[in-house]
Image (cartoon, rainbow, N blue to C red):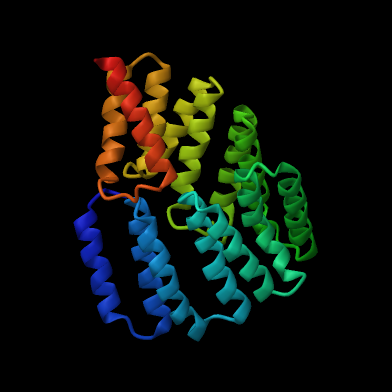
Length: 276
């Protein structure tokens, strides 16, 4: 969270070298994946997911193996705007997990269907997820309901509603005893929430979200993009340009297809043109 990337990479390499057994090796790879995602290197995260899967097969139950691989890999493909690949991964996951446990895959399906603008199917998948939580009394996963709802509203352009759902997802995720399911997930949630508030014209709410977010993690590029959006909305284009450039500096080696990176580049170009 402090932006010391070289130091972080060295520590991860050391952790991988001294790992004893599959579980420690898997944990070290997870940390490396978190770093690569922070730097916008989603392709590398995909490679690491495959490597981690081989270790997880040795220590996790079959169902957990599937969830720990297919859910993040589907998400990574969505982040790269490779919706056909995400569809294929999701299909394999549904084949690998029998009902009713496969209902928990509905939450990542919501994200994919929302990105495809297949909103009726997204709503149906959301209901499947709600039923799964009720069936298995998994209240600690209820934040996934809000997160999925936020994805639908965001793609529909209902930014205020999306921000409210992201806020509820944050509240639930921070209280939940389980991991959100993706490296850097909490910081990404803060960033998405703030960006939705800005797009809805709710700048004071966006500022409050960013104050909380930067207090816990000042090295997430998406937070700097959200700050740039807020500064632009508040009439401070030069400060906004500095903020988005900070994000792009972190993303210096980001994958060209990474959607968040592309959006940051577009914001940089708009702000640069306005400053000329």
